[in-house]
Length: 194
Length: 162
Image (cartoon, rainbow over all chains, first blue to last red; front, side, top):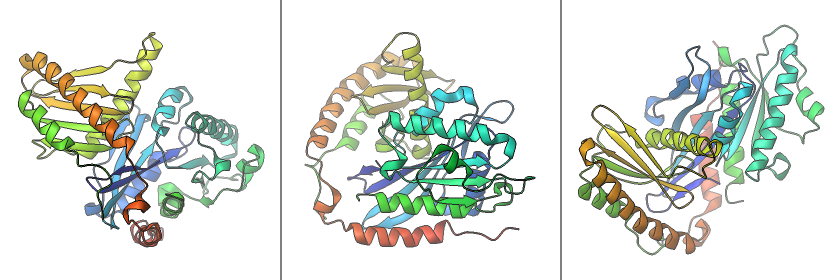
């Protein structure tokens, strides 16, 4: 559920980037941040470990503009990907309006993708949210420039998922990043008050 | 557009708290990190980010409480060199953040925050009880979607690589 402040006339939507460790969630956020004009974005926070891995989350707000008298904003978050940060991931998903699952296309990471996706489904279910109920979600097959990337559709097939919008990306080069956030934002807007 | 709720003055309540506790600023935020109201000296303060980070910190503390056999820690205090933060829970889903400068006044901040929290909690409950869908207030969801989709295309415009 988006946050609606009737008195301040604000609507804020929460977008969360989820996925296994080192799949490129923070790289996606950094790329979006760089592509946006300074007047529409707030400060970017990254809560990292000493090794520059995400410890808790990355975050920045984006102003969409004023619509129907309301200032509309997206809050973008990532979760920490490493398996042992499960508790943090669950916390960050609280109140989310849509998720991008960033998959690592390297064949050796397929099991990590599947495990992470299952965790995401469990975490969402904990908040009463499910992909089969039309909860906005986009799958990003990242690192398409790796050697022998997994076939697009592999994750959905292996997990017997409903059909999800998907994008191929190379986040380090900015490929597919804006398309992904564009698609998820639109899905969230279409779901809003629907 | 008609006001959806009876007039409230959360900002006024927070302003009163800032004065009575001699604090720098006070924020009301939701558990998932959105600002509900703010008051005090907000110059140079990024309240959106402060809310998101504080909510994350408070959520983590709630889980820590659970791990040590507590339901939750209802108050969180961060002591700095010049500025300090007092965070208290109001009901199930709102937090009040008070930033103050004189640590000697922590007792006063606690007392005033507790007092204000009770009144604000009641105001929030009353507000929730009469909440109505946006459409009932003349908000056109069709127009909203159309404009929003358009703005999204301009904001998140796919860039060619390189």
